[in-house]
Structures are given as C-alpha cells and as structure tokens.
Image 1: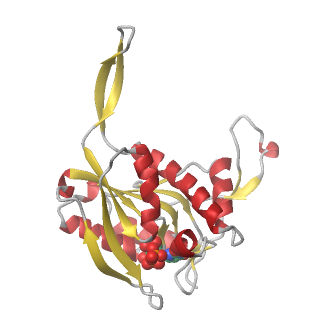
Image 2: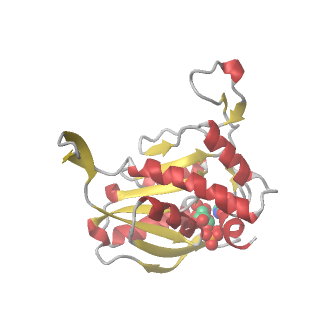
Image 3: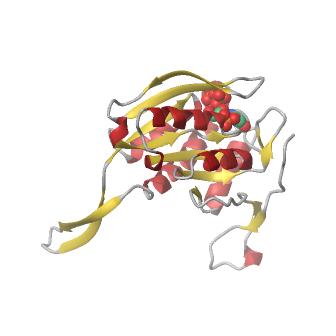
Amino acid sequence: MSDVKPAPTQCVGPLYRSESQKPTAAVSTGVEFDTVTILPQTPQLIALLSIIRDKNTQRGDFIFYSNRIIRLLVEEGLNHLPTVEHTVTTPVGRPYDGLSFQGKICGVSIMRAGEAMEQGLRECCRSVRIGKILIQRDEESARPKLFYDKLPEDIADRWVLLLDPMLATGGSAIMAVDVLKSRGVPEERILFLNVLASPQGIQNFATKFPKLRLVTAFVDQGLDEKNYIIPGLGDFGDRYYTM
Ligand code: PRP
Ligand code: URA
C-alpha cells in the first residue's frame, strides 16, 4: 500500500447552524493545485457519496445516485467555461445585462466508466457532440492501454469536457489527454470532470498538465496494493454496468 493520509473530518451543514447542530463526516482531502476544483462538501454531496461508496448498495441505486453526483459535477464544470457579456430584452421591453457561453464544446468519455457521465452532460448541454476513447487498465499492472478513439473532426476548435469518474494512478486520464493534445486540443481548453480521485492521481495529472482544469467531487485517502482508490467505491464500471 502506498502513502495513505488520514481522512480530514468536518462538521457538515449550512453556515447558519452551529457546529454542535451539524454531524461530523469525512470530507475531501485538500490539494495544492490551483487548477483543481473540489465540489463544496455539502450534506447532500456527502450523503450521495455515502450511498455509492456503500458495498451493500445495489446497482439501481448506484446508477441513480452516481447520476446525481455527476449532474452536480457537470453543473459546476460549466461554470469554468468562457462567457461573454450579452444583453437581452425582456418581454416587458427592458434590457437585462447577462452573459452567454462563448465557443463550442464537446464531451469525450473514457470508456467504459466515463460513458456513465454522458447522460449528465446531455441533460445540461442539449445535442452536445460526444467522442470516445477506449482505455483499459491492465488488471495486474494497472497500466493503461489505448485501444480506440473516435472524436469529433473539429475537436481542435472546441472546448473538451473529458469524462471519467475515477482517477486512481492517473495513467488512464493522462493517456486520454495525450490523445486529445495529439489532435490539436490545447491543454487549457480541456476540462476534466471526475467523481473520485486519489491524491497520487491528482498529483500526477495536475503536475503533467499545469494548464488543464480538473473538477472533482472528492479526493480520497490513497491507493491500495492493487491501485484501487481507498476508501473508494470499488470498480465504478462494474458497479454501474454489470454487477
Ligand atoms: C477505470 C476508471 C479509469 C481508470 C482509473 O477504468 O474508469 O479509467 O480505471 O485508473 P487509473 O487512474 O489508475 O488509470 P478501467 O480501466 O478499470 O475500465 P472500465 O471503465 O471499463 O471499468
Ligand atoms: N477504477 C475503479 O473503478 N476504481 C478504482 O478504485 C480504481 C480504478
């Protein structure tokens, strides 16, 4: 087992409640990278994560509650896309000085687990184009292997929302970004959306790609001897698709 840090704990709940009125829970480990955004550790998020982490949670609930977390991630991710000032006229003839999104986007999922995040992206971004990269970790060595990719032809002109719920060693996500960069997507136009990360995965990924923004729901304590995230949630792809 590699370097495992103790989980930080915190009273979780709204600011208007006193500490004694709030339950204590294990919250995300902090990270030192400005490019990494961790979702606010709200009671809702912690309760949703507790369900999907529970080994007794059955597949139907795992899918439902993972989808809820994915939706929160997509909503936060969209805040990191560029916007420009945009004034509209309301039905009562008054101007409203608002914003509009600037530029085209697409999603790219790392198969298979990343495909579970496509629906959440589609719910927020109607008819969004989605590319796929099939990378699988070798079960013994945990080394990633690239099998296939199919990406929008004009991907170099788009912002890319890279989708994978698990960042363990970081090998798969790093390989996926290398594919995107080889197709002309600049690092600063990639936004990686991730449910659960290890500190080692964050360190490897954020060091390699200092301009790439990563949004995660939670950074866990470490990796076990098989390079699974701990305490983790097990194999996301198996629990979402086959168990
Ligand atoms: C899982 C996960 C990531 C990868 C993370 O995929 O979805 O892609 O492992 O591990 P890493 O950071 O050490 O590379 P896996 O290869 O098990 O395939 P799956 O999506 O089909 O389950
Ligand atoms: N892939 C998973 O699904 N879970 C882990 O903990 C690590 C890689």
